[in-house]
Amino acid sequence: MSDALDKVAGLRHLPLFPLPLVLLPNEVLPLHIFEDRYRQMLKDIGDDRNLFGLPYFEPEGAYVERPATGTVGCVAEVRETETFPDGRSNLLTVGVVRFRINEYVESGDPYFVADVEYFEDEQADAELIQPLADEVFTLFERMARAAFKIGGSRGRFPEIHQTDPESLSFLITAAFNFENDKKYRLLEMTSTVQRLSELKEVLERSVAPMEENADLQVAAKHNGHSKKKIDL
Image (cartoon, rainbow, N blue to C red; front, side):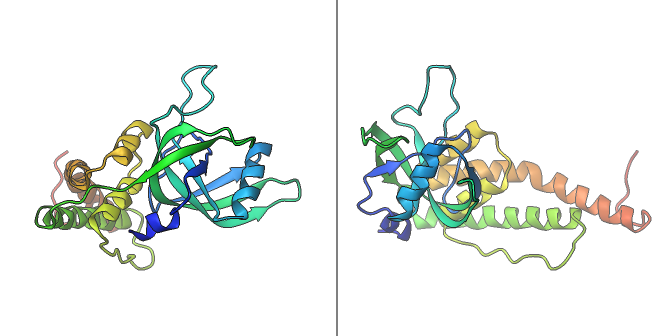
């Protein structure tokens, strides 16, 4: 059992906080809590494991109040809390593991509670997935270095550590400003190979133009003296 699944072991009924955004495993998300029902939820989970479910929910009609069964979300762990005198709170949360809503539970609580199942990616052939993960990591590091140059190369370039392929795929997904629909589709995938392959395509399209842009910005700061000729 992974560390993420170990955190939710035995937690079958999960309090839900539906939002029109997609949270990924290991992604950091600040939240502001002001509704009474979620203030109560925050108090209740604080007495246990500080875990709640954040399912993606974009209501399409006035009569749709909650995500449909089968919706995928991510468990959020509350790491820091700042509570104001009027009861509002600022939270710092981190995504833990994905879940799927099986059915809703009549718990008597003012917030939604659901019976859920947790899941991670299916096991992949190491000989197939590791070379792909290495290639994607190299592309992502090139993109991060280009972004660092565009930002003015202030300070030291932060060292990027390569993690396991599944975690790497979510790290890179979080780094892109994808539309919710695409981010959600990457969240619900259970194939790390498929997710990394899609991200590889995005990176291959993005890296070279971003590196060119970075080089041009550096050249402009040095009064245009560059080894690269620019056709105008």
